[in-house]
Length: 563
Image (cartoon, rainbow, N blue to C red):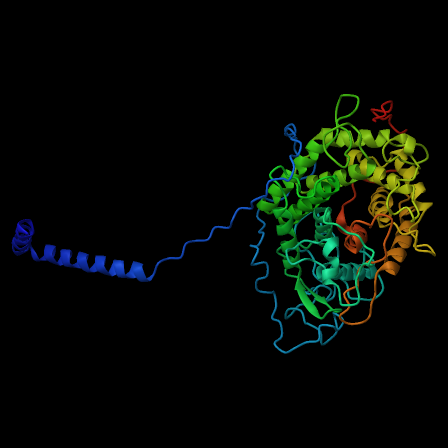
């Protein structure tokens, strides 16, 4: 008490002897301090929420470890712009649309383009944020090597835009993408195992005997994403697609964004989709999707996923059995040097898209893929699945009741050679083209001629070698008959259900030789990609060539037969 009394006396003495401005300053300080306490108590600033980093579950089983590949040389193609893209947060895929949606109810079952259907933005005369509305639809969504070469979405009808794809195929692509949207899971994935959950009651898109698993969900989801990416749609796309069958409206950036988020969440630290072990198809198609998504968006987060996928794919490449260099790919990484033409084809496609997006791919990866492809090549444009002795032999599987098309491996080999050596004068390409046009796409009277996989790779290979942008002096000789047959077969097999509120419209429900694991999701996504061939990849060859073709170079490992 004595100390407190002395302190109070001292303070009073100091106040009486202090100048007036010191007293005023002290009183203001007390008032400000008191008000500050009150303000902070009543107006606490909410903590800033930092986006949670993706976390990954530990793998169910230990995966083989691979050393990082050697430093990568610069990309052959010009680099893409800096990473300026934006991957919208998971709960904010859809923001303000580019135009006002009318308040009054509308019948969205009506054909897109009808005078009383959803209008485009005011003053729009050459395009629209509505998929399919306007003179040519949306044009030039992104500066990118993917999807930017298309002419837009023409209205339904017949004909062909100048230098563009046939109008009928664009309508088929639109309907195929709509079917994929209807059958996307809420978490963003696509799964053959959950396909029926999205089907109309009494109208399933797959038969009751279908036996699908989740083993290929990563690859299927990536394949479905590629169908959207192949047309230039990324996670920021504002284009609205009107589903006339179900009377619904979808923002394509929402669809792609949810799919990418799911695929990113399934990727492990080493770049693999370890929840779906046992198949490099998942890894290769996933790397392909990430690479094309980055090529469209220039988004740093997607770039990181693409780089991890590519590194894993490079590390999974087999070693050449000669002991020097690289080789092809097989179902699983590591182990012996046995590779197969099918997985190798997907891996090369992924590396090609990665390179086009500005990511570096080492020269030895291309050389290894080419060496394997040359070695597995037999005579007369035929190619083996595992070795040259099997060139022209049937690749057996669960779909053996379907016809086997011996040109399947030839088409894959053509594409590998095209993307690795860029030599339009390679005699094998002409041999392979002749082989393909001897077996044009056709359903067949019994439906057993259907092979979407063969048609996809045959279309890609011939479009590069002999399509409209080929430097060949007599281009079109092989491409024209193939393209006409391909369009007739695919458009005839697509579901055209006219009734409302039936989910099947736009899908490819008829099975083929290889759809036993992926079902209609696999078939629809793959066929949309086939119909996007007109603008998906620029031609890999140089200027016009009229010189005679040189002899086929001897394969580097021609005397080695891996076991």
